[in-house]
Length: 311
Image (cartoon, rainbow, N blue to C red; front, top):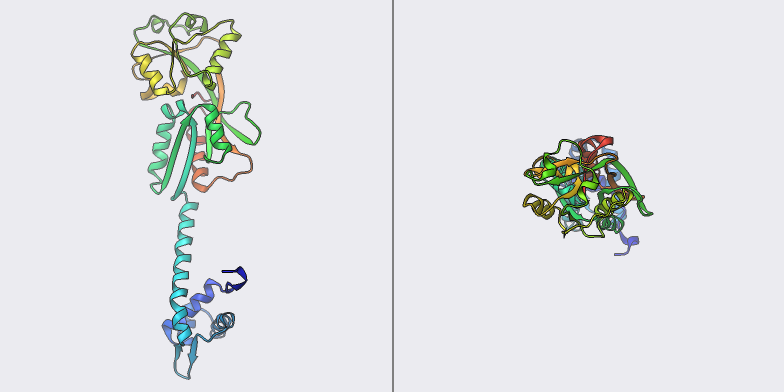
């Protein structure tokens, strides 16, 4: 239908028609609607003028629907019902109780601190569908740039144009080893030089985590050559537990149960860290559920502005 043929009628005017049809009297309908009788009369005339047809037959004692009115009434009822349902639906979305959120995050985020935060947030919002898309740093940025994800959780240094960063804190890296490893018995922090001769497990060369670690080693005049390369963080930790080698990972990625069966070894000064935070498209306003989840991550991220975390 062309827009110029859409009747210019308000929900209040439709309600006036329905109420008058139910009550059969201008006096009773005006009382039900809590309006004056002249105001009700004007509303009914406005609807009839717009439609170009009389909807009611007026007598001295009773108001009855015309044939046109009987045909119009079910449509008016359906329109008001759908408007009411839409209003409730939008209200629920605004209250974060309905909708969908797509979060793209670097892999270690989903292994460490993130699960507990997401579990609490989703438990309070059973009507919200949450999709978590794990990947390397570049994959997270691509998802946000393409609009496929509402926002990302990743490293926030040196982002490409069109993306906005909101730091949550610092991602401090540690070494992880099986409990029986010789380095696990040392009380002092582990230097990168001590890891140069170890069997190391790492992510692929295109991973931002690997590039960060190799850049730190290069700055220290070292070359780290991983013996095993994996694409999943959980696989890396399982291999470390099995004694296949050591790995360098963000600290909160092995916090809590994620670090069970591992010796977590702090790195000697100057250490290794990068900023981690939320990434969004510039100019994009997040939906209420997405904004709510972003707020929950701000509030619940460990260490606040001095955090320790991820990939």
